[in-house]
Image (cartoon, rainbow, N blue to C red; front, side, top):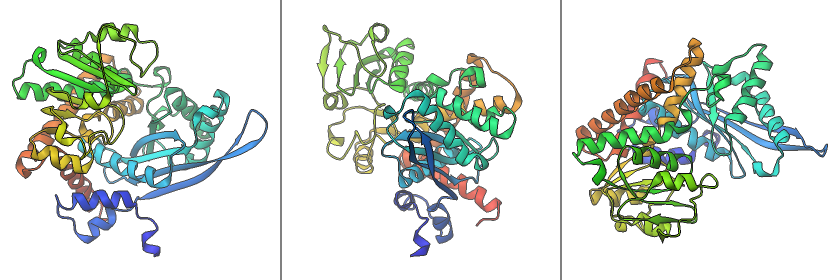
Length: 415
C-alpha cells in the first residue's frame, strides 16, 4: 500500500493511454506516474472580522527533467490534490511540446474567492507564498495566474516573495503587471498563439480566410481575443457563444460591433437582429473550424457524430473526451490538441521569465514575432510526428512530450 500513496491516479490513466502510443518500460512508467514533489499546507488567514480561518493550499512540482517547473495557481472551491497533480502533469507535457526549458507544476487554494474581501485576498495570497517560498524561485519553480487569480494576485505574491528574500526578484512569478516586470502582450497571448496555428493550417490546406467559416464556443478572455484576431485577419466568424447561448449569422458576424456593445467580460451583448442558438446547436453547426474556448468535456461520445467541422482547434483545456477523440479521428476531423493550441500563454510566460532574467523589456511586436516562431515550430514538429507515427495530433503531442522528458531523465541518470 505504501508504494501507491504518491501515485497520481489521473496521470496513471493518461499514461496507460499514452503507453498504447509509445512503449514505456516499467521504470519509465513508474517514474512518470508519480509527482516529483508535493506540498500540502494550511494557510491561516485573519479575516476582516478578526477571526482566523484556515485554508488548504497545494503546490505540485510534477517533473523538472527539462528545467525549473512552471504552472499556475488557482483559487477554487474544488481544488484538491488529485486535480493539482493532474494539471501539473499536463503542464509538464505542454511545456515539452512547446519546446520550453520548463517542467510542469500547478498550485492552488481550496476556497471560493468571492467570499473574501480584497484585503483578505491579499493576505491569503501573501500567506500562500510564505508557506512555499523556500521551494519556488526563478531556477526552481515559477508560478503564474490561473483560475480566479490575475496579475494583481501575482503582484502581491511577487512582493511577498521579494520581501522575504530581502530584494526584488521579478523572475519568481510570471503574469505580473508590466510595472513589476510583466511582459507586453500576455493578455492576448493564448488567443494569438491559437490563431497563429490556425493560420498555418489554413495556409497548408490552401483555404481562403474570407471563405473559412469559424465557430467559437466561449466568449471569455481566450474566446473573445481569438474572435477579434481572426476577424481582423479576414476570417468569417459565423457563430459565437457564452455560457447562456450563442448568436449565429451564416453571412458572418461583425465581431468589432459585438465587442463594442459588450457590457461585461465573458458575456455577449444583446443582439436583437441576430439569430439566437443554444451551445448544443453551436457545436453542431456546419463550419470549417470549430473552436471550443469554454470549459472541458464539451465534445463527447454523445455529440461527436453530430460535429460537422473539418478542424477543431482546442483553445479550452480538455474540451474533447477520449471517447469523442476516437470518433472524430475515424470521421477524418482533425483535432489540434490543447497541449499546443492554447500554449501561447505559457510561451509568453517563458518570454517574461527570460526578460526578467536579463533585465530587458521587449516591445509587443517583438513578443508577438517570437511567439509566432515558437508556436509554429512546435506545431510543425507535431504535424511531422503525426505523419511519421501515423497517428492523430493528440497522440503525436503525447509521443513528442514523453520522449523529450524521458530523454532528459536518462541524461540526468534517473533512468
